[in-house]
Image 1 (cartoon, rainbow, N blue to C red):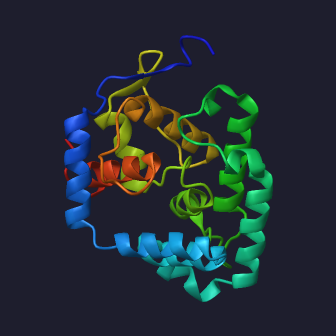
Image 2 (tube, rainbow, N blue to C red):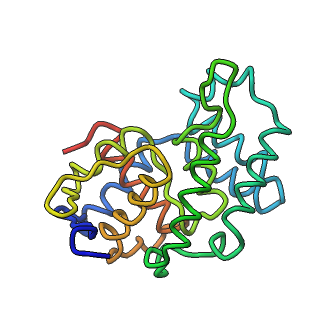
Length: 221
């Protein structure tokens, strides 16, 4: 990696601000219970049902338009192929490990993201899962590594965190390459922060909550 490839963060969150935004998320976002339900389903071997629950609750604005063409058996095949493409090593990685220095790992993540988000389409050519839904499903596949995003987070995070590369502003594309770049940037933004003492989820879930509070709920500044 050359200096021009390296990401520079000009506005990382402070510990105080990090914890403050997590509290805002907890107060404002009522769908957290569905996330906990999804995790509980996975612990009981109901992975497919957990993925569908996340799409129907945390991506409902999109999911409602494709629900009539949603086929559960096809969905099962797509998610199984995605997990196979990632492999056991990536499915057990944590955000804190040095995965971002491994080119093969990044390639596999990008490829899996693209497959999951694009491979299955409606009769009109609209992706069934799409880039937002793909991030939700990947997160449930490995809640220790994959961060969820939405369109607001993807588009607004470079400006909010003042993310640049080679002196130029960064833009996260909605494909696998953009998602991997987003993960790496978020590690730079939040890597040194600690989780609140009573926080019960993973670091990547906390990062999503911060991003959602700041970039999606209208507090972008």
